[in-house]
Length: 298
Image 1: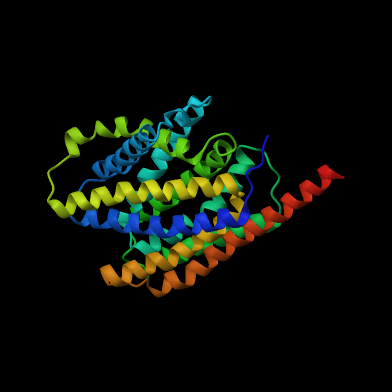
Image 2 (image 1 turned 135 degrees about the vertical axis):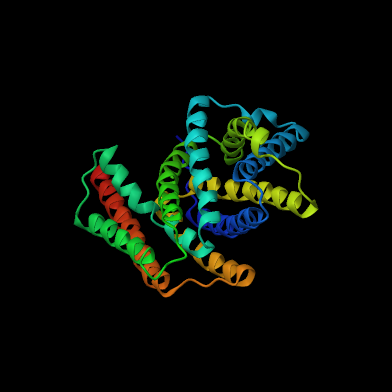
């Protein structure tokens, strides 16, 4: 099988994805403040990329690029990814942008737990220590001084991180055989019809600003997903995921500039612990990966 590994290109794509994704989350929060329902927001987030990709390929005479031999894998990715997206966008409406972003950094911890449960992998003291430290960081952020963080929001944020850990594994697998445009199209095209059912009860008329925001969510979601998916096609998860931590800077900046929100002291204390724990897991994964590669080659 042909290798697509291009580490530096993958890191650049991931950086672009974090910037665009932060803008999308900002728009999601703004639509929530305007009273636009989450199901409707999710529908336009998926519908616009689906028709955009289809129309672009059709106009270029390249519709054949959507052919796939793995329809059921795409369907499974759409089911898991759709659930993860519901939680990821939902937590943005329940928590400040910085805190919702920090909770997403627990994804590597869930990857460790899943490797034990699903893959029956043996996890040593380094990674278990990192998981425990990360959970301590979450407890600190959710401490008594964080009265602005509802329990519901914390639960949704942690659930979103868990689902994203599953999605990252699937994207890496699909990226071995499928183009990023194909992966993104089927994710959107499969989930959009299901989400359209909710428009009967949650759809509403909006002013021009509201429609522009919904359109912006769809467009930014499209390009963020393309960049993110491509990064996992050209680079290993353990390498590119490090760039995701830059998103905390974007989220904090948007929270301060748009909503006049700065994280409390508990967040500034807990965030470095969570980020440090995640980086420790990523470092340990790379060390173990190199060791396994050396054993195979010897």
